[in-house]
Each structure stands twice: as C-alpha cells, then as structure tokens.
Amino acid sequence: MAQLPCDSDGVCMLCKQKPSPSQTLSCRTCATPWHLSCLPSAPLSLSDSHWDCPDCSDTSNHYPVAPTADLVSAVHAIQADTSLTDQEKAKKRQELLAGSSDSSKDKAKTKDIFDGSLNCSICMQLPERPVTTPCGHNLCLRCFEKWVGQGKRTCANCRAQIPAKMASQPRINSQLAMAIRLAKAAKSGEGSSGPPKVYHFVRNQDRPDTAFTTERAKKTGKANACSGKIFVTVPPDHFGPIPSENDPIRNRGVLVGDTWEDRMECRQWGAHLPHVAGIAGQSGYGSQSVALSGGYEDDEDHGEWFLYTGSGGRDLSGNKRTNKLQSFDQKFENMNEALRVSCRKGYPVRVVRSHKEKRSSYAPESGVRYDGVYRIEKCWRKNGTQGCKVCRYLFVRCDNEPAPWTSDEIGDRPRPLPKIDELKGAVDITERKGDPSWDFDVSVVLALLLLIG
DNA sequence: GGGCCCGCAGGG
DNA sequence: CCCTGCGGGCCC
Image (cartoon, rainbow, N blue to C red; front, top):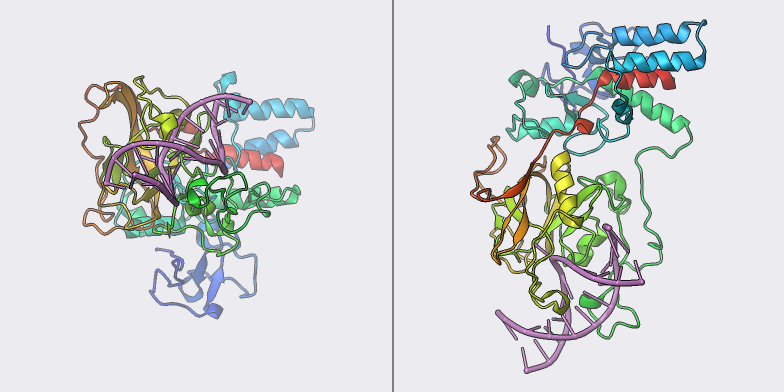
C-alpha cells in the first residue's frame, strides 16, 4: 500500500485534502508533513516530537545507492574492538571504506557532507528533504517537484531519464536526510557558525547604496563609478542561484527575471559581479556567471541555449586600450579556462542578459536581467571571424524557474541538446561530465558520520 | 549612431 | 603590482 506525505502546499498526496494543523504530523528527521488519518499506523501520542515518518523509519532502501547496514555494523565492530589501538582502528576503518582497492590516490576523494557533492543539482543548497535520482544525483523535494511540474523528465545534472514512478511519487532519501541532519547538528556543535554561510564584503558597510564617483574621477556618472554596497551575502565564488538566506534585505533571493538599471546594480545584487567583464570566475576553480550583451557577432542566442565566445583577442568597440587588433589565438586561460572548468564539472553558471546592442530577441527591453542558471555542455576552440582561434561555449538552460521570456519551446518537454554546426573544424573539444565530485556515495558519508558521532 | 575616453574591479 | 574587461557617458 502506498504511503505518501503532504506535498509542498500541505495537501495530502493520498486523499488530496489539506489537513488542519492538528491533523498534521511532521517527521523529526525530514520535517515532511503527513496527514495523520492517512497514516497506516498512527503514533501513540500526537505530542510525540520524536516521530519518524514511514520514509525515514523504513530501513529498506528505495534508492539505487549502496546499502549501508553491513558497513555500519562493520564500523561499529571495529570501534568496539578493545584489542585495537586508535591507530589500528583508523587503519581498519580506512581499509573498510576503501574497499579492496588500496590506491592511495583515493585519499583525495574523502567525502565531506558540506563539500557540495550532495547539494541539490538545481538550487545548489544542501537539501533538507533530498530526493535521489537513479543516476545518483540529489535534489530538494521542492526543487524536484517544480522540475517535474514543468514536464521535465531528465536529471537536472546528467540528463539521465527520471523514471515515471519517481516523477509522480518522489520519495525522500531517508538515509541521506538523516545523514545531512546529523552532519548539520555535528557541525553546529563544533562552534563553527554553520550554514547558511554568509559572506561579508570588506568595507561593504562604508559604501553607499548606489554607485558613486570618487574625487579623482574627472567625470560623474556610472561610466566612471565605484560600486555601491553589495546587498547579498553570497561569497564571490558562489555557484548557482542566490537564495533568500543570503538576501537579508528582501529575504527573497534573486529571482529569474529580476532586472536592474545597469551592470553596477546587477553587481550589487550579486548576479554578476564584474562591472565590465563578461565572465566571472577563477581559472583554477570555475566560473560563477556570464553576461550576454549581444556584442559578439559569432554569438547565437536561442534563449534556452546560446553560443558564447571567450574573452581576449577581440576589440571592444570604444575601449582604446583593447581595440588594437589582436590577431592571436584565444586559449583556455584565465576566464576562458574558468568556463572550461565549469563545463567539465557541470557547475551551474548564472546568466544575465543586457539590452545593449540588442541583437537577440531574448535580450531584455532595457537594463540587465537575471535569466537563471545554465550549464556548459561543450566547449571548444575554432577559427573565429578574424581568422584566429577563439574559445566557444554551448550553454543550455537548467533552472527550475520559468524563463523570463515567453516561448513555446520552453520547458515543458525535455529537449535534446541543440544541433549545431559549430563543431566543424573545432579543436580542444571538452564535454560536460558528471564529475565524480558531484556524485555521492551514501555508505561513505554514513560511515564518516559514524566516526564523528 | 559611431567614436572615444574614463576609471573601477578583480584575477594572476 | 600589472593588466584587462560583453560599461557607460559624452562629444561629434
């Protein structure tokens, strides 16, 4: 018999009615509300705050992740063995976790629950109520419901099919929910401030709310302005959407479709920090965001996907310092390499479009607009219009918020990757991978937690 | 609308 | 420190 909780609107997924608060019971592990009278076995007392929902108390695993009972008891056994020194215990645990392969390379793969590998593929946060796809990627229950609500049936991370049954009846990965809850508790007990992690820009408080010009600027106006205060608390190297936790002023985060007057204002809300450059990123880490202004002839903007050109080797119209015709090949260096890292890793990249040189019908009427997150499916180098090689990127939209433009082609069906001729004659082709650091192994996580506790 | 200059921000 | 950069204002 099916056992289903209430959905994100509090409506029971079994009887389709919205129970009153007194008829609702929340799970202590995953915080999911359940309709009391639809529960097969009601708890003895309503005031019981230690109630685990059927998902969380069910020891059988619905998900294709490694079963953990054996491993956990094995770790227990090691810990309980009084004949072993702590060092020997540690060694045995390591052997156990490493399996038979004794590769020392695996040391670098030690999992941390906060390292991002378990984060929701859509909102990039550690899920409170994780749902795990058969391909091993995690999503918040809420994000997952929105995703499939738009008719999408492929994994937001790796595009593997989502089974119909999972789409219609998503179930919380109770073991992972437990692991995350325990890890959060352990972390907050450590005295560290714990999530949500906030970032304070240096000297940010001293800045005014709007852009300003300094004494030495010879002209007033935004062209030569210094940035005003950064309003959000996401660190500059934060990937993915800007959530409400990091928006202390409005407490709503940056939503798809948010539009600002200019690049400075866009920067102040954290969507894209550089106020001139088109790519935000670090070559050894990845790229957080890009700006599309329509200024590149080779770029093709189809809304849901677009082709982007790397930086360098181009004359910016009007900028004297850079308009000397550079006829050298672009390479995957600096920002171009940052984009390639994000491609390899499958990181989401925030995209803003501006109206300047409006060449695409997807550009906003005016100002700078946040259009959600995209992933870079492929990147390569090829001959550009000026004969030298340029870095090129294929971005495909991957956001659970609807796009800010209206179009029939959007969202309601999973689409294959666009067919493009671009790759003819291309070199250095890189494809997006489901990077191992984004997969997870619950058995290892649980074992680590056990060691913490 | 094109050209040009200005100067901030941030990666390396 | 150095250098660049898918802004933006203003002059012609």
